[in-house]
Image (cartoon, rainbow, N blue to C red; front, side, top):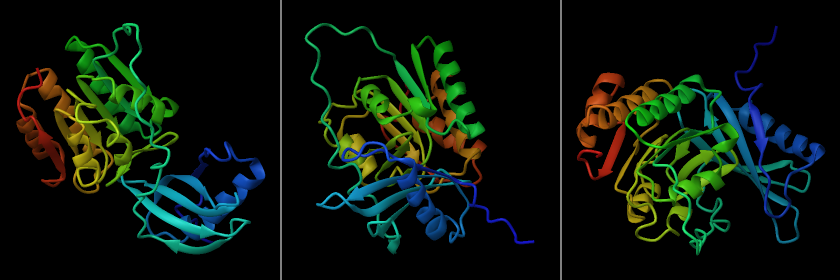
Length: 296
């Protein structure tokens, strides 16, 4: 009996595009077949899910597939650019593509302020686009409980609600804190409908993220270009993965951090160091930049 490939049942999500909107079943099937045959079944790494954005040429036909492949055991998004012909047959594969172009043309400036006084928003937002990963959902729910117990107004975003529109709205809303658990790369984090990128963050100006403490429990996000973009947009503090973060242990660090800074008023820098020592198998996997003092 032929041994089952670890990736043969991985979900492949074809994202709508500005040019085409949602793709029909026939076209979606062709895209999924190409990604499955040439990427997933050929991969040595086990994956959890793949998001695909189609890039079209000047005449409207497909030109390339940008695949964001979410690993099964870490919060890493491997990014692959696949050149295709008009029928989505694979012509070449570029694993060195870093996602620099992804969503850059679509990165929108924040909406202008409303002339009327807006209703009071939340103090903190915690979300995950992958609540099917039990530890991700549990980490978000735990952080929400700790924040509520500390007296803060909290919004929870799970699954389809952890999308670009909601993340952009809340992140640019001058919160006290924002936490995300999910897959990432040096240039952004992967959400339910695409990516939140360093390019978008760079449109916010010097105080766009002020005075927020932002914690992205995602791989590689504490590296350029995302980390300097977040700090350049005025974040008070940024915490994120320097390397590939393990699913399971990293959420324990996330939970421990919010417990210590919100419940016991420990300094943020000390809290992260202590939590990593207590909850994570190696040291130095997480980074923190900005204000390292008490949250309150």
